[in-house]
Length: 580
Image (cartoon, one colour):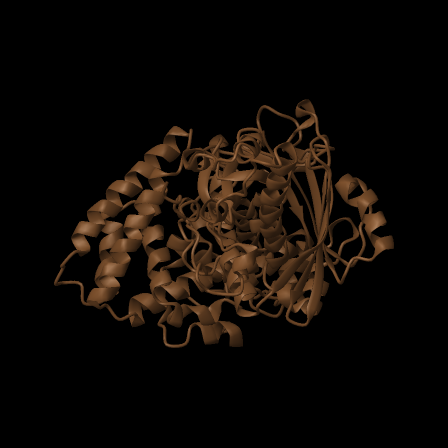
């Protein structure tokens, strides 16, 4: 059961989201939603950031024009694009350089890349362009300026880029089956924003850049533009190689081209560092599900549409190539489940509302299937859920309430963090790993606590352990001083201030902290990565280990020249390869 502290009523934004819903009856409980395994099954959905961005670009009729396209015969040089987003002007600049194969490295420690790029406020002037040509290719080794929103880099796909260039130069379209295996020409290796390296901080972006005020909107747009440039560059090289025979990429195939991405442990600490934001993202998703289940009218046409959607997901899953045996098994189970569910829905007289389906899903189907079906149900009813697309941001501020009785804090921990109290940290396997930032690699890493040095440099991500340690001190303090307030406890245990602030703040939210022991030997970090990526809107999760996953962004999304209509606006969820 979800409990909201009687002294912690939802704020205005949360109250508006919950209007018409019963927290305990309509929303899935936090113990289910915030479970790490469940988070690892989340799927992209209508409120994923890429989807919101594309709808915004179409709705506001963004205009993107290429001002300079200065590439040589081999595709090296630079390009400058101007973006008119309502009354705002932005620029996207990209630099393409020669890169030897032995220097092509997708790790964050790389020092050279095929492409480097930046998104800036305002038009790019000639003197500014020269500075960008010097700084952007250096990436984090250079100092950026406050007019810059995003800094990024990318590498060509060795399996696809040259193949596509050669095909187009020969006057033929590349085989679509090749794109089913690798759905992109280039892949990002890092996308930086929010004040890194001297760029505009998030507060400035959020309040001064209306077009990019949503979470990760600027970063997603940078990837969208990279997708466009990657095809433009390939077509340019093909024309230079064979000006009499070269052809452009077919528009249906071009729409199927996405941007590759490999995500590792570097993303995981974000989910722990920003608990209020993550709780809000999940609240929006769960409210969307609850509104559809409770208010969505079930009609024969809706049922047919849902069955068609599931058929699409089945085909999408079959077109997803993965090497990981466990992920391949998960994908196979999704196909079996959706085929079974399709038959179950066909002509079922018991299906008068979605409550029946909500009850049946956990009884018969795997977690991946359940989350896919919920994503599809959300897709069915845009009129019930789209009003929430601007509610995914939150002002993060952990609040300390020192005047509260210490016994009340104890009860809060017992109620909202009972999952952490149940963990026996005296068992070595429950403290097996520690998280640290590698000084050499500049990336988060996992160490084995009882075998490797470095635990003294541990990152503060072990919330479960910190909560339980705090609880034990609270209990001890109350034995000595039973009438204490929180302030009295913190005067004696000042090192507990941060975790007390977190407990008091997160216990007031419908969905609190992620319920996981991140030190456990069996913990799967990839679940954290997949949870965040699902809100980005990526598709085709392809795990390469328990520590990192490859995926595809913007596959199937409208092209730049299609932003003036809504023809392909909302049909690219679980994208399918074009026929032919």
